[in-house]
Image (cartoon, rainbow, N blue to C red):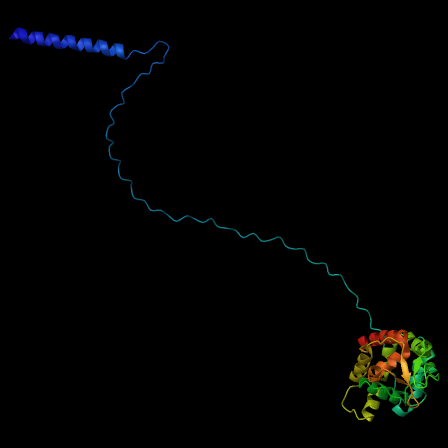
Length: 287
């Protein structure tokens, strides 16, 4: 029985040795290859529990104090001493004459204007202020008076050419009858003319009240009259006329029925109308 046990132990030993030899032969690598050694990793040990952290109080962050930095002072502005111009000495106060005796005064003032002397031979000698006011009032209503005008009559008949017994044609030279008057009026300095009007305004206002317009400003009527002239439209000739009585009338009914201001502008011609409107446009801006 002991012998059998010994044989069993010897057999197990021999088998173990053969197995080791076989394993060593099977794990050999070809020559020249890098041999890698496998190192068994140590068995991880269970870590000891870390001690609980001590409780602490978190203080709020401290905001650093900000020191206000004052901006650099701006330099004091340099104030230059200004010398106020001395007011010009006012001219002597002008005493206006009465309305009835104002003609000579007005003519003297017109002659003192630059290029105003040329107007003296064209304007009337009597009741100049009153006639001017009536003339302006008519123009403000699109009317054109035939009598008591503030200027003298042209004194030249309108040249016409007879087409037949009842029909006439206005000659082109008919417009030139008014050249002298328009040239003299538009040559006057606008600023000086307005200054004279301002000086005479009380007389104009008095004459305006005499014809029934008390409490109304003559400036407004003058402005309306000027605008009526400026708004008139132009009509091209030639102009055919008829003469049923003393005066010539336009044969074209549309022209004859136009307002009196428009028809008068046709009579003085496009050249004179343009110059007249230009002067009145300058004056009304000042008014």
